[in-house]
Length: 145
Image 1 (tube, helix red, strand yellow):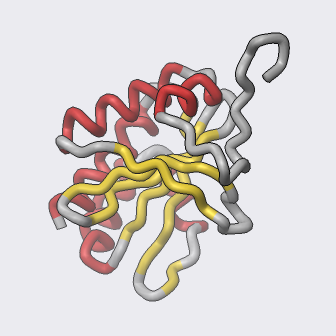
Image 2 (image 1 turned 30 degrees about the horizontal axis):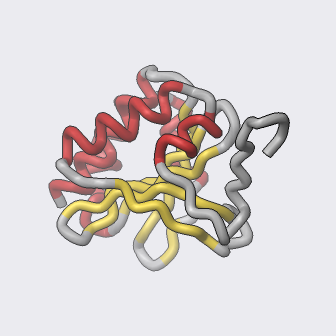
Image 3 (image 1 turned 90 degrees about the vertical axis):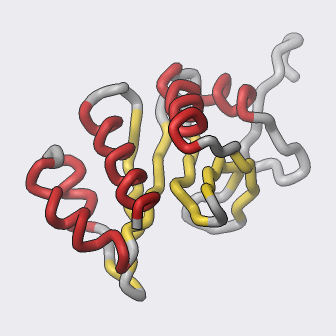
């Protein structure tokens, strides 16, 4: 607490925040809009988990449907990253659409190392722009495969 204001520490494994607290931490309305939209489109709920991974240590938000991961959100101040896995089942469909995607998403896809037939795309979002919509296209492909 600082002068009556709660300051969220996403690296504190002892305090599990709720989605709204993470949204306040991000301080970007796109975060809560994204969460609301994914819940509405896929009729799923968020799962807030603590990750000990050295690359993204701290609390994150995951969305799953029918036991399958749709995406994971990694909150930062003013923006967040969306991680979407493109696996063997999605690869052909994603690569067919790749020329239609923004150069930014094309670059993210090409720079992501392929490991065990999967690419783990980590996409920064701070605006509800074309990249935002492309993330939902990737999630839809994942959902349909």
